[in-house]
Length: 203
Image (tube, rainbow, N blue to C red; front, side, top):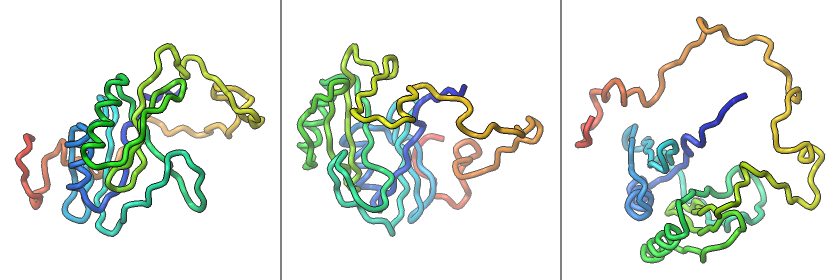
């Protein structure tokens, strides 16, 4: 059985990396831990936790998305509604609420969803964001609950992955034929490209 560790990173897009850094690093307190590329094609990463990052591509050809209320139905092509970041306590929600308000950003009241308390806002790129504090003694991963009033037949099969629902793998790649190919980011372990601006961060 596969064992997932969490979300390694979410990849978003912006046309204003400096404004994005000001929001995520300086207002919300997420460390800027990595950067790649050059003007017109940057990729930066902010630290959410020890195992999770928030990534942004900077492309000057993109535009901020229109703000859409979190969780409200939409029409047309769409793959993303909002992202929620877990914080340790309700106290963190109040700190975030006050910081966002002082920074001039719209921010909701703190909402009780039963299993989490949540705060909603938008980043400068129009990305719908949520901050959530887990409610003590309500753990849906340990004790799944399905409260859909009209669940589909597939839903009724339960929370656990079921074998035999997809074709089995007939031909596994032998260990001696497995290849990992070079890509962007090798500079972090091999050194910067010669033509890159040498910034003051320690290497």
